[in-house]
Image 1 (cartoon, rainbow, N blue to C red):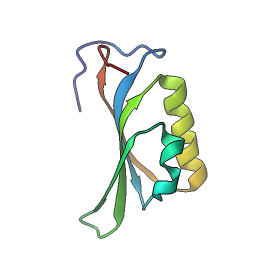
Image 2: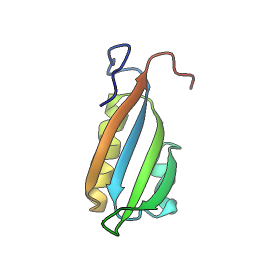
Image 3: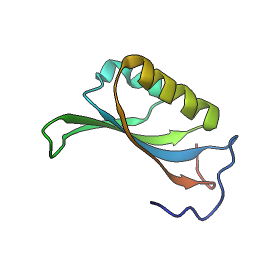
Image 4: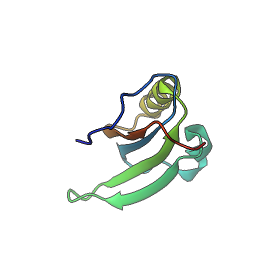
Length: 88
């Protein structure tokens, strides 16, 4: 688990990494506010989609997570990598 130097403010941007089981088609990338999308194969042999980037606020993050749920892709991991001092 990452130790954040500053508390997270729900109204400020933060950098996140989100992992999903399955392959999220690149056509959906615009739905995730310009986050970088990569793919890898897990040790179990299934595809993992990783979304990485800055999320403008917690409301946007929750909207993204709801969208992932609605697409039917299992959520594997969410981590806030940094908060504050982020350039948009």
